[in-house]
Length: 125
Image (cartoon, rainbow, N blue to C red; front, top):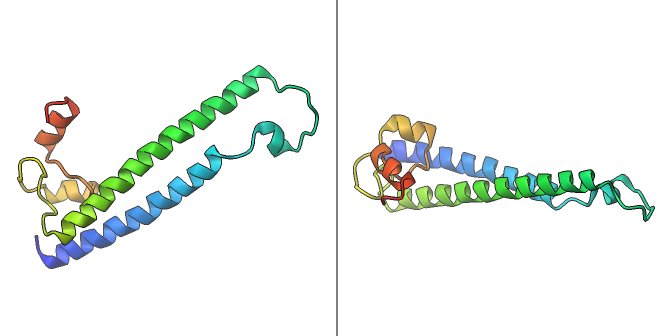
């Protein structure tokens, strides 16, 4: 891959990293927010409705799952930036075949070709 192309992908990856990093920070704030009772300023000791507690727990669990997914994406982006530095970017990390430019434009942190990605999803890699 040409140096100019690598530079474009580096810029794209860094921009994506900033965006995902901002998303993670916002999600962490949302997941770690005060309880519904604390947020509303309710000072009474009356217990909250059990349905409200369940909803709060579900929302927090859902947000924590999103954070985990976004952190995995950040890791993949960092690995792609490292591959750019090592001059191995744009090649499947398993079989070494070149990744199609269209695939890299859609998912610049892709590390597998389509065939190897399918095998990886099936647990065959």
